[in-house]
Length: 130
Image (cartoon, rainbow, N blue to C red; front, side, top):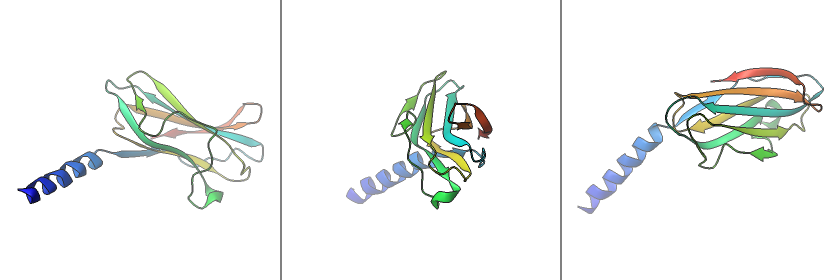
């Protein structure tokens, strides 16, 4: 009986993990004046979306997320239908491309946009998160 319970627990856990989805943007480079990267996410669907993680990556950082100055889309945050959240990083790596990456419970109703901005807030370039 104990083996059955352990097996059922493992299978249930695998089912939950199988529903996780990754979304991300293509890399974007805003030139030597880029100063900030913002990843926006909107839930345009009818069901809540849970974020497991939301990070900003840099080609110059060897696959490690760069430090964020505000993080509203991670650590189990549930994004209700019709709501939005964002992740922001002030780029300390001005001469590198950056991209957004997130793990969510369901990407069907999720839309997103990544913006590379100057220190004055002007959008230098952007990419769709899909």
